[in-house]
Length: 343
Image 1: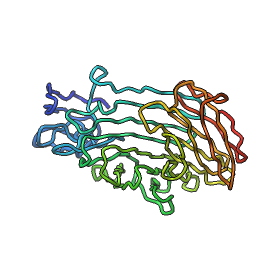
Image 2: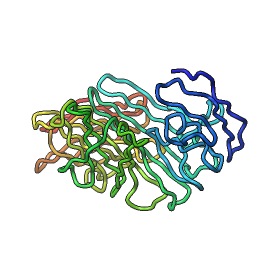
Image 3: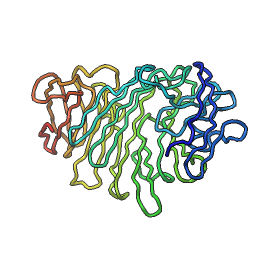
């Protein structure tokens, strides 16, 4: 709903924006004033526009974005305009079976001076129910606390039996199953659940790396299944797991609950440059759809599959027969016998 009066936003310096919000939000039950009578961070409006004691915007912790602390606390993204940043959605395509998008220079959306030096987000949507988010981030100093935030309706419950190294959280609203979220990367990551505004309505899952490093890669899978028994089993598909033998790719293996179903492998480029050179993958010899992102757009490739001991060895190199999309994605199926079909 619209505000009855817009907040008055004063000109700001790069380090201390001065904000005076004298409006009353027209949302039922929410009234927020800046100054001594406000409750910073206790409402949606306050989280966005109130000021902390040192005069900086409040934390803006209510979004599904990357966070890193700076002196005094945490701050989320700022209202940068098109002329203020190089942030852009540089790749997007909808090819029926999947949608792929990539956003770059996301670090430009934070209020300076901030500790985030790089953030690239890749998202693949595999119809009808799977979303895979892959983020590459970097900060100035490894001692900065950092997390990836995801928000869900109602409290997520961690499930036993997830693949080691991953964490599966199911979300239920009473008896209604809302879906599942599985955190895969960084390796050794930890999760913390936050009851947003202590209202027991919206909850935040904060994913933190297991070690203090400047650069991290994050992978999260969302499964919009209508029942817990229909959720895919998620495992990492990386060099560390033994699935990526050669090449700068990593991602997730999504196994259907039924052995007769079609499994899915979604992989992303781990570097800022388009993929070049041969790739070798090692995967179970099952009927599997592969979505590999990060190739040179419209490049052509040869794919060779050998099968032994219930495993496929997949080699992708220069040649012909398979063409990457206009955004650099290879989309193909390998059946249990090793036959390859471009999709």
